[in-house]
Every structure is written in structure tokens, then in C-alpha cells.
View (cartoon, rainbow, N blue to C red):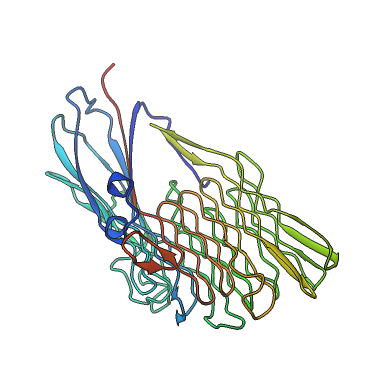
Length: 403
């Protein structure tokens, strides 16, 4: 079960995603934690426990221009607790920022107040960071990702469950055949298991983004871009490509909609060419007081081919809620047919990876960012640059009021 449902009598829900103040996209705004105060309403029904979900921010992709290793970022951790609500009690809500530095981490989110045990979730590690987060997932005695680059964050203090984010996929930085791994996912709201891992990359092509239900798919061979995983199925990947044709994999199915179609690029000669764009994953999400259900499909994979002087390519598709972004590829070891974009992940999903001189996808809320193979960057208004961003943290509160 990849969603949370409780038949209890809660009738209110509050969501706190991270948002840059005033719509700013500066590095400071994206990475700085938001600290808010939430006051329990005076008409709260204290016979019904309130349930709190805390996800940390996702890690960024592990490369910056020619630096780093091309590993995808890890998903943020998850902690879930239930408390007896107290009317008028003020609680401090901290929403961790995005991981945007290739050698940094996503921010830690938390929920704290008088009379309760603070629950927190650390952010995923960016692809070029291998420091271990503090704590263990429920049922663990040690960290199975210890020492790994791009590992997931972990929840701490949850009295229901604590879970670990998925790790980013493997990649490699190089100017002629660089390739970036897909981003790992954050744990599903059910809390039944840890997050899933981003797909591994290979020469010229990235790995796919993970969903809350499946690992991101590995690139099968050079130039074959896999589709992102969905909430109801894995993505796919084509088996081959040539100078005359290239096909991206389809995105995995979603609970509420189809995965995005894979992109295509075909030619018979330099003057006879056609291409079809990759599709975004379909399907939405339900955020209810007693249910959280993310039902998106994965984004389709991109495509690229080259016939003589005739070159063309299409970008990867974005994932729906809970799903991963599709990977992108570029043909040949030069900048020709490069500068493609991989797909972003939906909420909790990982971004797709890409080859050299292209742009990886960002993670959704708490999802890890995809990585690039060489030479890509995102520029903010203050000049800061980083690879595929991790998503900011997320805090959700469910409770009941007297009616």
C-alpha cells in the first residue's frame, strides 16, 4: 500500500510546503528553512489524535559544471507521529529547504511544541555528499546506505514510524560521454517502507527518477533514455538506438492516470526527419483529513539522433504526483544535440538524469534532484548555480474539530 488512509473522524488538513518568500528563486531563499507557528484551534476535538507527517528536503544532483560525480540526489526522510491536540497550543513548524549544491544536503524539517516529542526528518544528501544522517529507519539497527553518495535523509522521533529516503542513481562526470543518475524518492505517506532509489545512468544518457512505489529505471545502453517510474508501475527503456532512430522509454503507470509516452526522433536523411515530444505523467492526488493518495504517472524519456549534419532531439517528460521524471539523452560526444532537459519529479518523486551538456530534472517536494554528466547548471537571480535541485521539505497536519 503506497498511500495513507485512516477511517477515523478527522475533518481538517493543513499542508506546509517550502516556498521561496515572495516567489524569489535565489539560492538563499531556496535553501533557507521556513519557520512557522501553527496554533491548534480553540474548537479542536481532543478525543481524536492529530497526525503529523514531516518530510525533509531532497538532495541535489552531484555535479557542478565539470566538478562532482554525476550521482543523483537522495530523497528526504519521513517521520510520522500522533499527538493529543491541545486547544490554543502553539507548535513550531520548520520546513527544510531544497538541496541545490552538488556537495550539500537538503534541509531538515521538524514539528515541535510543549508536551510532545519533537519529530524531525533530515534532508537527502546531494550526489557528491556521502555523510550519514543521524538516526535509523524503523526496524533498522544500522544505516544500509552508510558511506554512499546521494543517500536519503531519515526520520527521527516519530512515534508511528520513521523512514529513510531513497538514494540517488549512479553517474559519471565527463565532457565526452558524461551521464547523471536519477533522483531518489521520499517515502510514501503510508510510511510502510523507505523511499526508492534513482536509476543509474550510462554514457550519454541519464537514469530515471524514482517514484514512491518503484525504483527509477537504469539506462539500458547508450542513448536510450528510460521513462520515470509511476505510482502504479515502473518506467520502460528502449533496447537500442542508431543514427537514424532513437526512442525514449514510457513513464510508469499512475494510480490515477497513464505514464507519459516516450519521445522519438527519426530520420531517413538530413532533410527527412520527424520527432515526437515525450509526454508528462498523468494523474492527480488526494489530500484529505483521513487519506493521502498520490496517483501520478512517470514522465516519458527523451530521444536524440544524428544523421550526417541533420540532428534533432526531444526533452524528457515530468512525473505526476508521487512519480519520477523521465531521463534525457544527447547523441554523440560533442555539444551537438545537447542542451536537452530531463523531466522534473512530482511531489515526493525524483528528477530525471541526463547526459553531458544537458539539464537534469528537479525533484518534487522532498524528492532528490537528477544529475547531469557535464557542463550543466541552473542560475538563480543571485548568480548561484547548481545541478538538478532537490525538492523542499513538507509538513502535513491532520486533526478534527467539533462540529
